[in-house]
Amino acid sequence: MNDCFSDIGRYISILDRLMKMYYDRGLSDFEIGWGQQFYVEYIYDHPGSSQQEMVKCIRVDKATLTKSIKKLTEIGYVCEINDDKDRRVKHLYLTEKAIPAAKQIKKIHQDFGNAICDGIDIEQMQLAEEILCQMANNLNQKVWHRMEEHNGKQKSDSVNG
Image 1 (cartoon, rainbow, N blue to C red):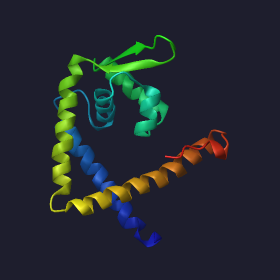
Image 2: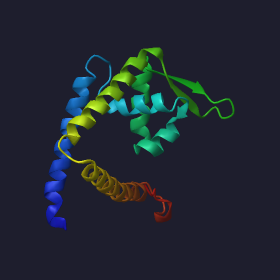
Image 3: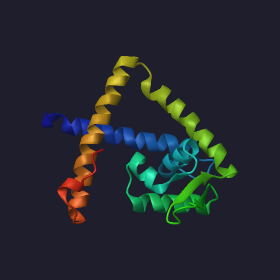
């Protein structure tokens, strides 16, 4: 089974680079690119969400998320509102300035989906998605487990996808 890794890894890497280029080109009229589009879309779909919620859903470390939210706030795409009950929690909302970017992200998703699925039947795409999801879950468990061990946490505290 390990014999196929080099090809799988190479194709995942190629898809990742091409996807970044596709999104960066599609978002070139906005002040964001591939890295920020996940957060803009999440807040667009879940107004008032917190960074803690986003960390779990998007599977990104807190430092990366904090840096991205800071940039989005600085360019006027996101506003943070403190929670009434817990001042440590900030709810995130898109500003009017960010709405066109969020709509463009949705359009790019649709266009990208059509391009990547061209010539592949729906059953094959569903199977590919299931397999990629399982691969991501497998790797997520290993990566978070190692990060937690590195940070001195117990094995039983590891994140399970």
